[in-house]
Figure 1 (cartoon, rainbow, N blue to C red):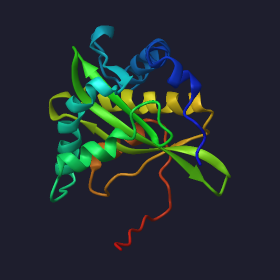
Figure 2 (spheres, helix red, strand yellow; figure 1 turned 30 degrees about the vertical axis):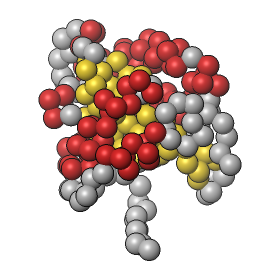
Figure 3 (cartoon, helix red, strand yellow; figure 1 turned 90 degrees about the vertical axis):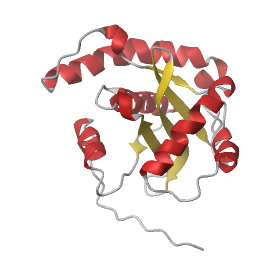
Length: 192
């Protein structure tokens, strides 16, 4: 059985938002400046929060959009609702993070509490990262990755892992800019 979700996230979801906003806002601006980008104003940064039960229905269209992006056939909202609800905080399975800009949900990350037997530690698997087309290129994906790293730190987890499709060059550019290292492992699937 995985360890219980972090008490700091269980006790006060908004404490996470405050601590993330305070610590990550500056680093997002600094990394953008280092890349030569211009950051216009602090207020434009997305607000990253765990998805609550009351926001869950608003998330479902983004989940379906993510699935369409990866050409999933037979997208089923009822199945999505049942599957993804398990990640609402507090959860022993993972966490849904939402990115909002001006009150509108523009992206999300779905995190799984995962394990690494080589190092005998828990890890955080960022299984899904999606940003709506209207918000791409505006720092939302980077903010979700930084928030995911903050969740891992809060849980005392040493690393975050994720993967992407080999032809998703846009995502790879973002991921390469984070300082994450590409794995040399190959991934396999066996349908049963």
